[in-house]
Image (cartoon, rainbow, N blue to C red; front, side, top):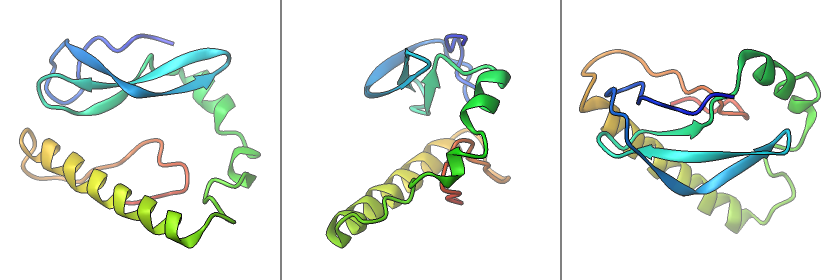
Length: 112
């Protein structure tokens, strides 16, 4: 795993830690936000081998759709996801006017 040194969007090298993180292979992976363009990413970045191990065939058999959760909660999550998507796209459009976006790591296959 390599710590993020530069924003892939604006090339800034300063980030702030967000209060969200993952634990993978007993290591903490932070969500960080670029202080210039506000793009959110993970740091450190997993190596190709680590990503391949994480996303094995069993990963997609797990309950990543939150089945069995109250509908009220699911609708709230949907609203949060939609707001997040709009905000992220707005940030990207400040630097890139045209093109398409591929969101890597959307687990359940969410498309923007």
